[in-house]
Length: 416
Image (cartoon, rainbow, N blue to C red; front, top):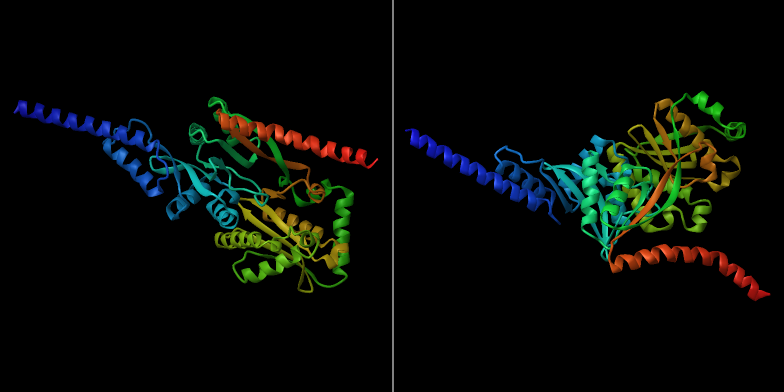
């Protein structure tokens, strides 16, 4: 009887050791997964955990490239909700951007811990380089990560792949993401180039509306109220804020017409000037309306819209994305009157910030002096092709700057 117990115990021990080794092999295999789907990666993690019989060697942390689909989109949204990520880092925004502007292949660099998504970074793969799916319609960009550990793992695994170049645009220059990317690049010998793309004004709402108004210059405060009075002399003036739950397409058409009525329309920079741009903003609006974060605001005179704001509102922040006004009312500055009304609304709702986004336009700096710096970071691999591209990006840009100053002078000399 004793011999049978010893024999059974030995078989049990051998089986447990076999399961443990199998689990470790699965973990190592999953650590280098590429092109896998969310279900496959989660299944690998569950299989690895089950194979160890509960005797976890270490947390099952898997790095992989995944495709955007229903499962990973759900996981991404859940992670974004848990971490308070901005709308611009969510699958709804990225998907709308890619459908309108995407070229190459959209891939999601992910880190999963015990099957759960811990970090995700959307990337565009094109001609051997990895880049952010961004352009000048992107207010800000970055990964969504549950903690610093998963963020560092994401950065180091990306650089370990040794792509010719990694380019991430519209990153917060002082963010942990930028720091992790710099550290990973240094550890792998990548050359880094970095520059500020834009500085986006914002207002932190940490005082009452009367206190904020008193902090404004007398000229700004007085002019906004004077313009308001002048418009009120023309008829009934109302501020109309919609969430897109009704008549969305009709409201967007009305707003885009206003945005194109001034200089944006004549210069070709209005939303309606390019079909891809209009497709993008309509797609974002549909997504935002479904999520309950879209805010379309109009300043109406006797019911007729004379100014328009296209915004998102999420997690206590108001994001002003696009705006415009009827050029026939330019002398009354309806855009300024609407901005004043929307700022007042943000204070009354108890929001935490009003994000003007975009660049340091003079009209925005009348309302605030605070800015968020958005940077472009390039990392070039330590190989002949990476060095060549670094040289072109680095010295080519400097040469272009010099040429911009030298050529006009040379032209004037020839004219003499």
